[in-house]
Length: 626
Image (cartoon, rainbow, N blue to C red; front, side, top):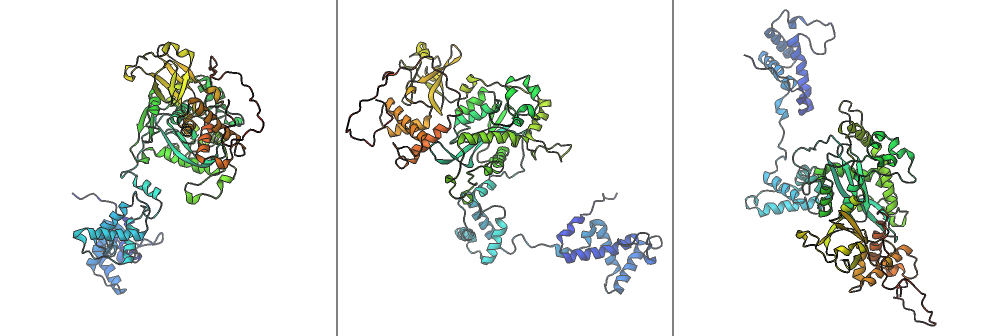
């Protein structure tokens, strides 16, 4: 029984030097004439030469004739030599005719001792998380490693040029002398092949992450600062379901992204009519019969997450965000630590936002300091609300309608779908489950804390909240033994004007306003309050409220205010005020208190008597009321 005939590895001829490959092709021409009677370049209709005609002479006779012909031409070869080449050609193809000695390769690192190779490889590995060094340092470290090892102390080092060549081979693709950020990213890649969980329905698998946006924004007090972008992307459709800009990302912002993902995006004044969902490829009429809120919605799909993949950032592993996911029945899946490849889609999406959106915005800073322009702070910059509106419009107008390379039709790979087109396609097979997010749902997504309801109300960070609706619960046990009778309270870290207390009996939320709300006319957050507490050490609640009011008033009046020139204000003060004010624009409209808060100082305010030749106090607060 003969063995199975295999296809010869003809492509391996590329491993041989050009001279050896040309010689093999020269021999192939003669061997084919021995086998078939004609060389491969014979014209159509040509007849074999008499001494090589297979119909007249046997294979052995044709081999003897070829040996005689080549020997007469000056290429001395025996009949057995022709036979051996013919057999190798039938077994290995063109590679069998090449000189095997020419294909022998030198070791990967030449004549360099293996101990030197291992020492330099260790020196390169040590730089994974270290600062970037030069080749000279790697060579120096290699010598130190060899010296520290007793078994390799006597190893002879090659020349400096050889060490440089060895470094080029070992450091290929590691970015040892390049960007430390890129080097860490390369080292974080898994050793095995990349994989991705399949997602065949919208919301089946989603990813969320935050990153600094490479754009300067002009905060209320004129400060130019970068902001953070928190976004969520759907794996099945590659849709950006929500994107939020904040000075610093907090747990409440992650919950806000989650709320936006399950809430329709409303058309805003000034947006083109083409951005309406009714004018897009999304099945607007079918969805409208399920959710009436989509009547005036923009062309961004509403996707309810089933599983969300996130990293171990404190924002996403916080109790507040986990509670929000549990409330909506979402499975939260943290990725492996220091493994960005576990959520490669959102990482790539955030990078695409930088290249497709951020670099076109005024105040673009570049991804690194060496790519940053000069005097960007002095140029025209968008405010945070304006930039947020631009980003929302860009997501709808550009990202959701742009063909995505990862959304290709398996039957027609040349056709790439946009996220909206892919959503409409999957909707036919997966359906749509709306999750209306009302006011109570919004409160549920806010951070929680447990407090006692005292006779005077609820005290949080020197602030007292009170309402007549708390009368039945004052100094009462909440019934939650695990929390020692404390009451569940939800609060917005960007607006300290009110809190919400859960009424476990009536199954409702009680809105409780800050008692000093009348002293500060605008909402402000924890950042401004904490900064004011630092400045007014040991002060009363009224004094702290006045300090916050003055801080926000100075930020509102701008750097030209006479009562507080810019030079006398610290950058930290202005940053606290500006960061607080830019987050107040997108909060829910405050509810009107059922009863006006009681004013401790009365409601009638009279002008103070003018005293001639009074002393001027430069440190006095002109906005403080008597």
